[in-house]
Length: 297
Image (tube, rainbow, N blue to C red; front, side, top):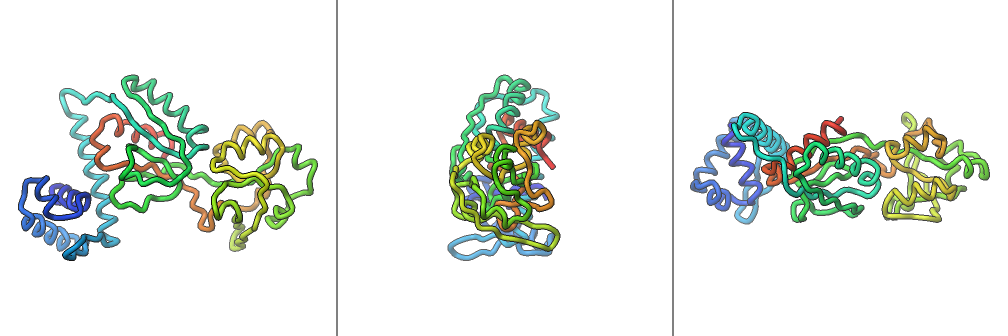
C-alpha cells in the first residue's frame, strides 16, 4: 500500500502518468495498472482521467492528503532509526499574516532557534493570500483550510474574534448593547472588501450581519490594535492577540454574549501549510512538529 500511495502522490504532483513514470523509473502502463488496483482496493475513484488532464475526485483529494501525511510520518520513523541523524540546520522560509506573526510566531521562532541553533529563519509578514506551491516559501500560516490539494496542512489554534475598545472610548460614547449599536460608533476595520464593510454576529440561532462605517482601516491587525489602545474606536480582532490587554484593562470586550466573526461562515481556525517537497528537509519537519506541539488543537 505504501508503494501505491507514493506512486499516486507522484502522479498527482507531476500531473501525468508519463512524468511520474520517468521520475519513478517505471512504465506508464505499470502506474496505470497500480492506480486501477488501488481504486479497486479502496472501492472508489481517485482520479478522473482524460486525454488532457487528471482531476482529483473528492475521495481522491482526501486520500491524497492522508497519503502525504502517512508518507511524511514514515520518513520521520526512518529518520528516528538512522544511525546518523540528519542535522536540523539550514534556511526555513515562512510567510504568515501580520498580527499573528508579530504577536505569536516571532517569539515562538526565537524559542525554536534556541533549540536548533544551526537553523536560519526568513519570515515574511504579508496579509495577501499567496500561492504557496509556486512561491519560494516552505511554510505558510493562514486562515482557512488551503484549497490546493498538492499541499500538506495541519489545523492550529482557533482564532475566535472579539469586539473591543478602550475604557476611555467607552466612557465618552454611547453604550453598545446590541450589534446594531455599532452602526453609531467609530469602527476600526481591516482594509479588505468584505471585512471593511460587514461584521458578523451569532447568538444561538440568531445571526446578524452588521454594516459598519470605519473611519480608520489597515491591511493588518497591528495598526487596529494600536488605534484601539489609543482610544480611536471599536475594532474586531482575534482574542488570542489581546489577552494581556483584556487582563490589564487596557481594552474591554463588547457584546460578550455574541460570537463575533469577520466572515459570514466564521472561518476562525488557522492552518499550518507546507509543500510535500519541503517535508524532506529535516529543519522544516522540525519546525512543523514544534508549531503543532505549541499551537495545535
